[in-house]
Length: 200
Image 1 (tube, helix red, strand yellow):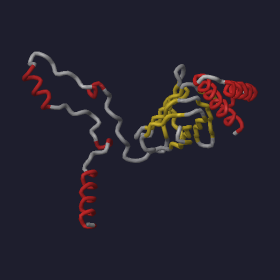
Image 2 (spheres, rainbow, N blue to C red):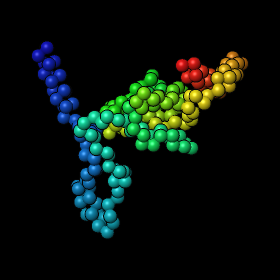
Image 3 (spheres, helix red, strand yellow):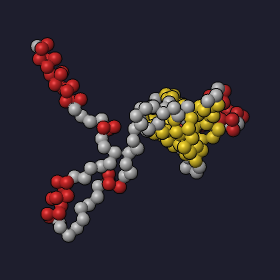
Image 4 (cartoon, helix red, strand yellow):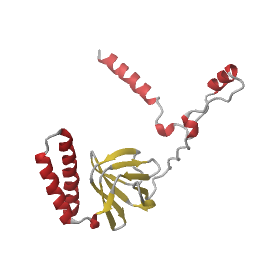
């Protein structure tokens, strides 16, 4: 029985190994010659239709060695805070917890929650408070951070944050409908995160 289990296990691992990783796929899409041949036989006077992959730019090549710097693009709907800035590390407030990103990080997409984005460049650390968004980490050590709203932490007014937290806490306790409760809870979460960002 154990001999059969080990044979089956070896067979499944061998089949898994033969599957290509996304980094093994060629950067330029290959055309399907069988489809094009069939198309020209059926409809010789029309060009074959283009697939979505034919409109996409080729994927950037994965570097053979890990770069020394991480290139960061940090954008908001109304402005670009950082564009192609080379830094040592960023720490993003992912919904799964704080996530540090260094050069050579595995490609990742992370949803962001209200919290602090820290950009580390040598001994300098720039901190932004984010409301929400996404971080896209690419294999070529480029990090694209897209936020709905962001402000440098040093521009937050502690008195206004405390007032907002008190207001939303009061709204949450007096909310009667599910919508009112949800809106108040979001306000409490954001203001609590801002308060934590200020107090350190």
